[in-house]
Length: 146
Ligand code: CA2
Image (cartoon, rainbow, N blue to C red; front, side, top):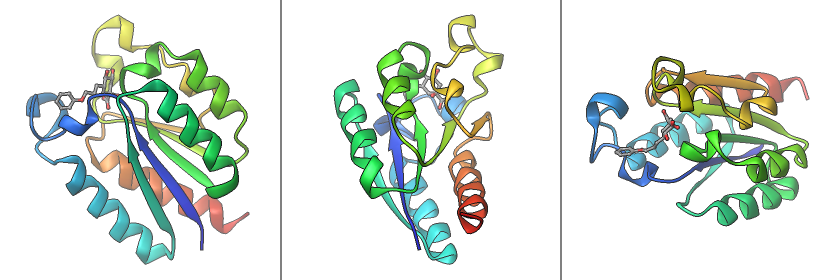
């Protein structure tokens, strides 16, 4: 059994409350409940974290070095700007999956590049909130072999 951190970045606390045409109708609490249930099927535990502050996300990634065997992260807009989050992930030895609810490649060009992708073991974009569950499935598959 492993602990997995699921980290959501800025504004994702608004999920399901605004812009449903882009991000869907599910709230962050709905997503967390679905991921927690799936993780339980695999015998894993997920700790859910969300912050609008870059430093807090970096602190959680540092904490994951000791506490988690995988990180599922949607860094939100920090994906496109934060070398600091990339550096923190580069200091982490476990699995990293990057999730974007929307297909960032179909959107404005400033969303096409993600610093985090350079470290991620897998990237999901455009699978809606189901992307978090797909990332969890992949983490469970790879953790079996570790
Ligand atoms: O598609 C994604 O998951 C994003 O990471 C979401 C970020 C955006 O900056 C990235 O380019 C792509 C924005 C998160 C904002 O979330 C909201 C959710 C509901 C209502 C308003 C914002």
